Amino acid sequence: MSEIMLDPLKFYGVQSPMSDPGENAGLFADLPHDVPKLCQIVQGLMVHIFWAERYGLKLTEERQQEVQLRKVAQRLARIQEMGSESLTIPRPLERRVVGNCRDFSVLLCSMLRYQGIPARARCGFGTYFLPHHYEDHWICEYWHEAKQAWVTVDPQLDAFQCDVLKIDFDPCEIPKGRFISGGKAWQMCRSNQADPEAFGIFDMHGLWFVRGNLVRDVASLNKMELLPWDTWGIMETEDGFHSENDHTFLDELAELSLRDNRSFASLRDIYESDPRIQVPKTITTYLADGAAAQVVL
Figure 1 (cartoon, helix red, strand yellow):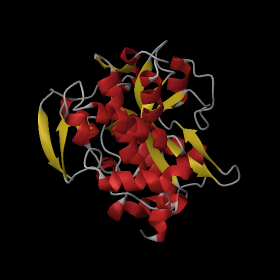
Figure 2 (tube, helix red, strand yellow):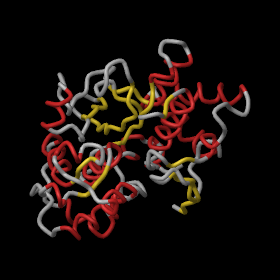
Figure 3 (cartoon, helix red, strand yellow):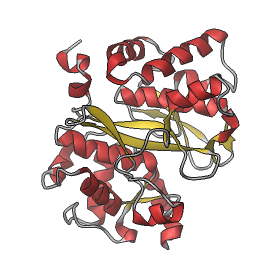
Figure 4 (tube, rainbow, N blue to C red):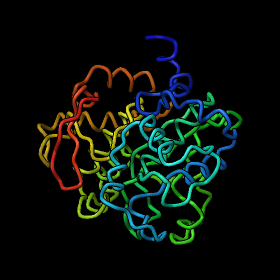
């Protein structure tokens, strides 16, 4: 492997196929080098599809399709279509691109990587949306050089959402245990520390859902930050698993995903060599109407 591939901080300091801003990279040139301010900028560019009506914004079906934009380059192009002003200027609600928690996290990740700051999007569950429930959610982590640690940030939580949800912590430094990664959720369910039925979103929940977020999180740790409804490999089995070996494999995967920099090389090796979790060139994605479609990445 190259030096970048062996060093986690160098690896996460470089854009991924999904976070690469492409020809619009210059839009990031005048952004502040301050995480809270970057979060405010992300919030001024995007509106969460499930929060739009609470802000008073009625989305057309056409606008709702913006949540399918998989790459930051596509999202920035759409932002430019709706207005060419600096990204530092908050857009009115009707000119903010529609996204979800994954999109807020990947856009912040892209901005940080542009500045050379190691960052990564994480897929898992938030404990701060509904009582006694682990809500399907994505956040962003960045490497804090002074602390020599990964700091967890929720760029989706603006002042309005913090007020509605009664958030009692700083969204730019989420306390341990408030966001549960896919790997941690898998361990909690497998050890009977938590009920798998408490993990998910809407009418989708259970161990199969936790499995999906574990695999998406591992893919994201390997810089393939796909949409929450993209599936491939082991996720495309039925509600059960092919064999007990799959359970054991996922147990190992979950453990590696929780060791951070210490297990980086091992996690990379498994991802690159095992088709059960490696993102292929063609994946399955599920549309709003529940129909499945094949997508070439």
